[in-house]
Image 1 (cartoon, chains in turn blue, cyan):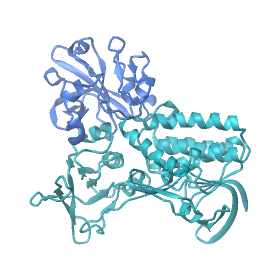
Image 2 (cartoon, each protein chain N blue to C red):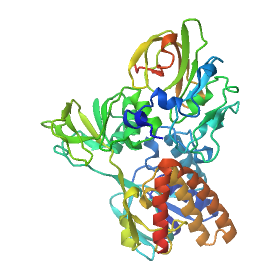
Image 3 (cartoon, each protein chain N blue to C red):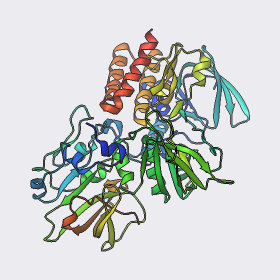
Image 4 (spheres, rainbow over the protein chains, first blue to last red):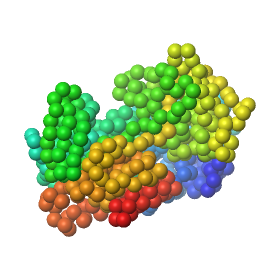
Amino acid sequence: MDNKSLKTVGSPSLEELKNSPSFPREEDFLRGPIAVIECIEEIPCNPCQTACPKGAIFVGKPITNLPKIDFKKCMGCGICVAACPGLAIYIKDLTYSEQEVRISFPFEYLPLPNIGDVVDMVGRKGEEICKGRVTRINNGKANHNTVVISATYPKEYFQEVISMKRL
Amino acid sequence: MNKASIVIIGGGPAGLSAAIEGAKAGAKVLVIDENGKPGGQLFKQIHKFFGSKEHKAGTRGINIGDQLLEEAKRLDIEVWLNTEVCGIDKNKKIWGIRDKKQSFSIVADKIILATGAIENAVKFSGWTLPGVMGAGAAQTMINLNRTLPGKKILMLGSGNVGVIVSYQLMQAGAEVVGIVEAAPRLGGYGVHTAKVRRAGVNFYTSHTISRAIGENCVEAVEIVQLDSNWKPIEGTEKILEVDTICIAAGLTPLTELAWIAGSKFVYIQEMGGHVPAHNKTMETTVEGIYVAGDVSGIEEASTAMEEGRLAGINAAASLGFYIEKEQEERTKIVWNGLNALRCGPFGHKRKNAKDKILASREG
């Protein structure tokens, strides 16, 4: 695999992601909130598999295998989001409402936003895509200081948005 | 004390892991470290580690450091801090300086060298200006001393150190203006590069620094594109306004003590240059002197801890603390862990390089 965008721009292109074994298809997103793993390079790592309470994520042996998700089992609980040392997992919900979708992504910068704040949602290259509204901030002890922020944003930007701009 | 059974020089992840295994086996262990606190680089590694549960994956380096120190304390391991080892010989006599004023000498039954590595410098016009520093130095400033080296930073090198430190500089409140990489492809793990890219950091592949600009300190940097023969392309110079330039251009093993002890060496470029030849128990060609961690070839903290365990188990076994079967079993478990960390496209190169080192010991 060449992964040209990942290895020159720094982040994967949507096409590179779609070629990876775990990137959800449209029908998977229609199930409700699910985990999206943007991990397309074989590195020795498997905490996502260990963290998933539903046994939906499989890495196996060798631990450099790319993770695979069974979207029939994934409930979009988000435990894997803070467990991933690469900060490469987020939860996306295409079915959130008529006009809006929701993302829950890992965030390790201060200051944190407040619930209700309108923030700039960004894409894989850090480009500002649209505004989003923060709906939840999960800074639970089990996250070990990887905060998981949930935000809603317009449906038309569903695929492009993956995080928010630092405050 | 003027005699100890296992003396470990260097109290980082490899040295502490070696000490813990040695003490668990029942050996009297002494750890010597030149710093004021043991733990090596672990306490500035505020990111979560990769690997599997057995490698403490998902735990931040700083927390792994705490865990190792607690275990060392529980096992009553003696640690001499602010102590520099100046020399060892093949009879395993060690001499050094404590607290910069008092010399000492002790004789060990076994020595484990876990001295780590030093950052490589890169020379360019203006490289001696204040504001040009190693990426590891910047990481020490932000994560240990809580001091921001600058507000606008250029990173040279896109390996894992370069991208991780870039990320941590942003966490500390700096802006990373760019990451420059001489190779046409980025070196670090894709998840790390993606993390800094989505924070808005630009990567400049096939680029290098042509000069640092400034009167008394760094005020800007000029970067230039490289052709396929790594030669600067005239007319592609670009000036970026920065106040700090960080160099993440690899590490070199700190092997002085292995040299003066008389170990055989082998040159393996991928492992950072000259490394002491060693076997699967981490023993060098000098009987009873072991190596573990970056001194035995540059890798990362997870493998350093496994290598430390190997050296600790086998040094203790050679003193009679384990029977052969126990030694073999314990060694095998650690090797399985090491092999897991050394697979995949990144690990494979390191595995091949490590195999060359092992082969050189036999040859």
